[in-house]
Image (tube, rainbow, N blue to C red; front, side, top):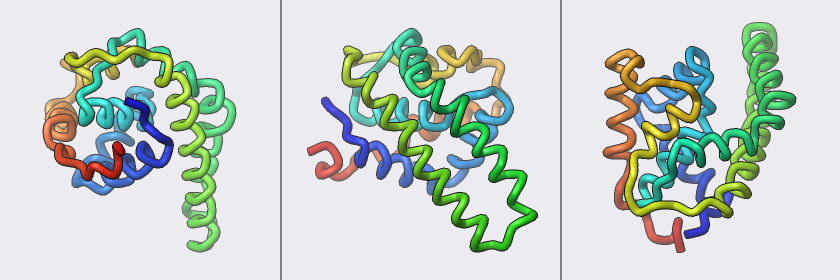
Length: 164
């Protein structure tokens, strides 16, 4: 099943609004280097009953690594530095630019995903974490519980129009 950029983005926005999702994803990013868009794609695939292995998640991460390393990560750092030094409106504009950059990261992963065969069973959470060199059992209990919750309960009955 093909995932469009718009489906991925809408799903990501919805997950991002769930209690604890943003904090958990950003903690994983800051403390363990896990790209939030990779985690969001793992969630979306799980919701569709599509599963990838660790090597495939490595491929997805590598698909956007150059973009992330040269553009997105430095911009994220700049935006964080600017937060307390800019007027609210200017900071909001920086956030908007970052969202455009996040969408580009997602698009790069989708191009690679289109060439990866998915399985009908698996464990996207574990595969995604291990692809980033993260042992799920080494994560703090509350973080692992939040991730497990997201994978088990993040809108299992999504509207059909998202996957048309």
